[in-house]
Length: 288
Image (tube, rainbow, N blue to C red; front, side, top):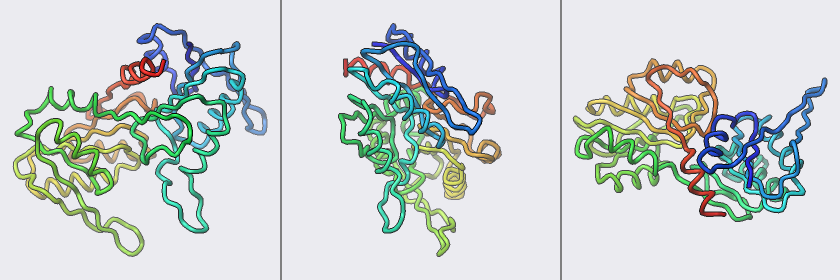
């Protein structure tokens, strides 16, 4: 078994390869004058792990072309550390259904099994898929920093309540939810806190940080509700334009993300990164 990785997964792939004592190879991407890309691999891979993240449109194109270049492999494990378009998970009439579309496209490729990490929705891929949670690395990190009777685990919205509640039960601490209210134009109007957070450190748990607006609104609401301070844990740090500055200027004390998306390397000191390399290695060992 060997690893092939896309351009935005280099550091994580090398770390996973070291954990598993495997060789890792980059996908070779050529760009033509009209911006089309072509992807090749250095040799034939009989058993291969493809490590990729698809936060941008071009990342999906690179992944599909890479999977096509590996079409003759006999056993291909696709490890998607971040699966783009998973937030488009509702089927509305006369509107695209991104999560379903990209899942169907992956089913046409030569993928034997798939691994995803804290996907925004349950994976819709009709091939053997393991949906891994980063709870295994968040929980011990939180425990090493805070006493359970001093913190409240908080979901920044109703949609993430199950994830945050699961962590609160594992840590045996209190749980709260921020309920977002929007106006008729879909703009966030106010955020209400459901649960007692008075004099506690609030630990926000989320799957994706994109614009940072949800976490900032939740943090403001929790501080107004009387908490001592706010920290945040999120699996995927997408950090769209302007979000890092917004989050750095917020009243949150600390923001922790994983390396599921390579992204910005020089984050401000308020930000921390935890690696999911051990989670990937453990999961692959279970499959092999």
